[in-house]
Every structure is written in structure tokens, then in C-alpha cells.
Image (cartoon, rainbow, N blue to C red; front, side):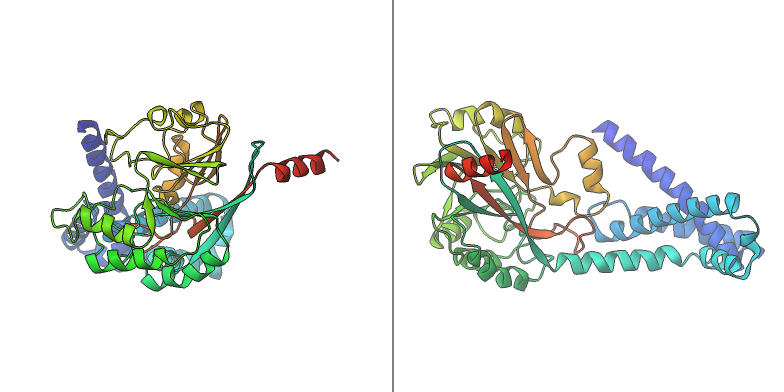
Length: 383
């Protein structure tokens, strides 16, 4: 924790130095450089306001400021390259116009507005993402829908989900898995009850199953809008089965296991994969639903065929997801971990900020081909 605070303080100092230098240059463009004391006071005051605006990195204000700063840095780099390599073009009419546009300081503001406008539009639309998986196990073919991280009633219009329910039912899923964080701290009791009525209307041959996420029970607030009992009642009353450290057998061919959420730092005390699947028949196709895409190696070691998760939002705001991938986090998409397939959804919405500039909002359809379908596909490839 001390190292984190030190790093945060150092980042704040570097941010302040860059912002001060940038603002000083812009102020001079507008003529404030004639009186140095006025230039210093205005620049220092604006710098302090901007840096303090980033104290809470989870605030939308910080997101806006950091976007403008990052864009300004890239523009400064582009300007430096231009000064080195563009030669006489810099003195042409077009070159002078570009220098004025760069010098006025409006480009980062305008470009941030454009990026975040796209991000807002992106947050209000959801798409279908489809995966094709195959197994040598002697099972039939199945269609599984994974719907996770809805954070209902907060930053996305509730109509986005309502409009997708008929489309999801139209995919003729055999199983629907609700992968957690369907509701959160900002969801009212009325909205919580509403979302499970909506989700309970999805048609699925073998039913709808639910695993808890880290937000569903509203652990990060002192003023909860519903109790655990009210939450579980709303889920069950709409025909949705909760799987928390237990599994069910489906059609004598599949095993669907749902894990309790790992919580922050995996300290929830939940059952291990080995404890959960100790007596499971590994000849069946084993699916584990876990809100967070962790412990993939343990799942593979226990014979799990497919791990499905959400939680990451694929980073939501660029370049968070790309940085997560560099650290080895299973951030988004399809992965192979040993003999286990892992599918991580970006979620049906985002969290905290009403914008998504990385990936898209989605529901996931997983087609599993087994038995004769797998064999015929393999024969077709060999031929």
C-alpha cells in the first residue's frame, strides 16, 4: 500500500509538471506572457485545479482530464517530430495554420470531446459476440448465452437490455448464464427487481443460472438499497437458479458449476475448484462460471473444459485493457489455458463512467460442437 501511494504521488508530481509547462505555453499564445506574475498565478492555479481533479481516479472528471493530458502529450510529440523533419513546410500557409491550431490548446479539448462522445454512443449499444468451440467428448451440440456485468439502472439506458431480450431468446439458447454484477451499489431496489423480471423472460431450454459478482450484494457502500435476502428472492422468483460453489448436471452430458465470487484479492473463502468438482464425472463436458477470470490453471488441472467469466469490461477505457494484457491478465476474448478454454466477456455495459472506448458492450453466444458434429468437422478438415 505504501508503494502504491508513493507511485500515485510521483505520478501526480509528473502530471503537475507537464500540465504547468503546457498551460504556460498556451497562456503565452493568448498574450498572458507580458505580465509574468499574472502568467505564473493563472498557470499555477489551473495546474492545481487539474491535478486535484484527478485525485479520485474513479471519477468521470478524472477520465476527462487524463484524456486531454494524454492527447496533449501525443500532440506535443507530433509537433516535436514535425519541427525536426518538415523543414520549409513549417513556414508555408498550411504549416502556420497548423502551428496556430496546435498553439491555441483547443485540440486536446476538441479531440477529447470526440473520443468521449463515441464512448458514450458505444455504451448505449450492445452486440452479439459468437464463439465456436468443439470437443471430442461424446455430447451433443449446445448453445450457451453468457450475459454478465449489466450494472442495471446506472450508466446505461435500461431499454438497451429490454430491447435485447427477444433477440437473445431468438438465438434458441440451451443454457443462459448470468455471470455476475447484474446489479450494483447504484442500483435501486425497484431496478434490481425489474432487471430479474426482464432476465427471467429469456427463453432457454435447460434454464437460466446465476453466479454472483463482486458488486451484486452492494459491498462497497454503507447505504444499501436492498438486502441479500431481497436480492436472492428476486432472482429465484423469476425462475433463475443460483449456483454458488455448487454444480448441476444438464441432460446427462454437461456439468455447469458456479463459483462464489473471489472478492477483492481472492479472499472470499470460497471452495476451491478441486473441492467443488471433487466427485464430478470428467467424461461429461464441464463448464465453470466464475465472475472473475482467474485460476484458469487450476480449472484446467481439474478437467474443466470451459471457463466463462466477465468482470474486466475489457478495460472499458483505452488503454486499460491493453495494459492488463501485458501483465498476463485474461482481459477479453478466447484463451487456451492447458486443456481448458476460457471465454471472457466485456460485459453488457460498463462500470462507473458512462463511456466505453475499448471494445464494446455485448452478450456472448457460445456454440459447442460435440460428438458426431465434432467428428464430422474433423473429417471434413482432413479431407
